[in-house]
Length: 280
Image (cartoon, rainbow, N blue to C red; front, side, top):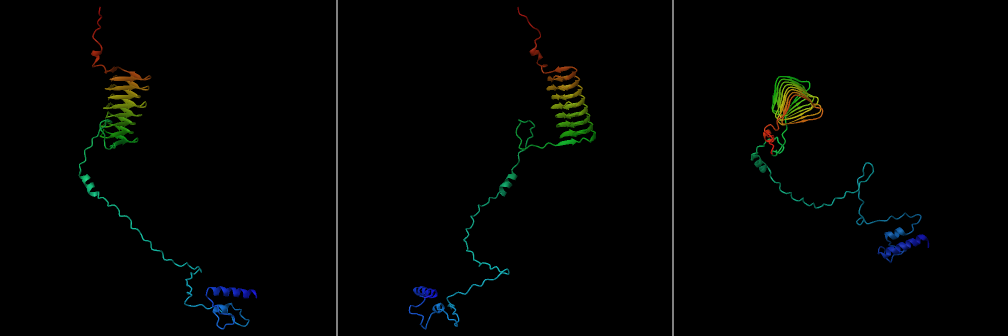
């Protein structure tokens, strides 16, 4: 028996075991199944037998649209519907409009402006207004202001302000202010200050000074009247009389005039007796 006969015999036994081919069929039987006829050895003149399949059992091939480039797209799969969980309900928003309107109706307490550091607390810091006279500006006339004044140019006239004065230019006239600072400035006139007067070594004053506190390192030609403490530093030069409660003179300071301290003027009789009694 040839190899092909052995193969046909083995296939028939397998099909017979599965019930696809009857056991009583043989090669000489007239009625053969399609599989038996397909497995039989065809003769030279006979046409090959093509297997036939039941049209009802075999589903037709699925026709897919061809793309222009020859690529066959995969079949579309309907996505499974996922049950979406509704989001949690948002918390109810509070209406602040009525509360805000009530706050607007409430009266605002008046604020007090305390210049002292320890005199109460302010809810905000007030921005101080400052008037600046630039370096290339010349003012011919008097100046009166309720704000701070910075003089970098030249002023011909009196300067009267209720706040602080910063001088770095030239002033020909009297100055009245709260605190005065002279940095490299030249002035011809009297200075009256409710607070302190400070002069650096490059400042020059031709006039009198009347203040509560004096810190000077420049040149003054005039009388000095200080109700508090007066400090004369190394480069200071004073041509005039000095009246102060207390005085400090550093090494190098030049003073030409009378110096009078009034710190013990009222209580001098209590410190110094009229006579010294010698007991026997």
